[in-house]
Length: 100
Image 1 (cartoon, helix red, strand yellow):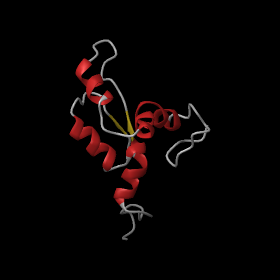
Image 2 (cartoon, helix red, strand yellow; image 1 turned 30 degrees about the vertical axis):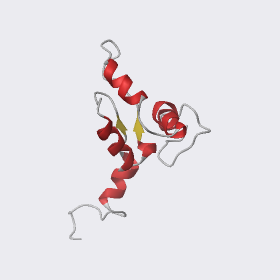
Image 3 (cartoon, rainbow, N blue to C red; image 1 turned 60 degrees about the horizontal axis):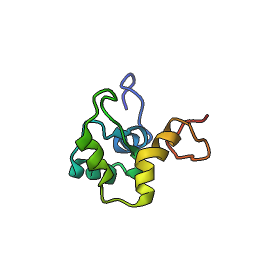
Image 4 (cartoon, one colour; image 1 turned 120 degrees about the vertical axis):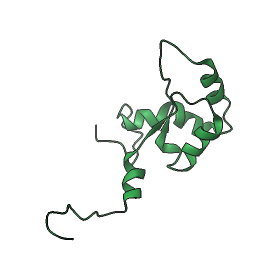
């Protein structure tokens, strides 16, 4: 790499994306998009979110509640992904969680 052109990456750009990008479901009340988001970066990269706590979207809640996913994946979506990512539950360590 020529001098002054930046640092050579140690990994592929897609690996950095997989390790550093998290997706929330806020504003998405369409099952195919939520399932796609879970399949591509992985179920441990997606967190449930409501766009506005003051103007809830009931169809978003119904759609998310009715997703055809396992009980384990449902708990990850609604609880443990956020807890691990924000360091709320240090015992739930994931590769992407920061030290507490």
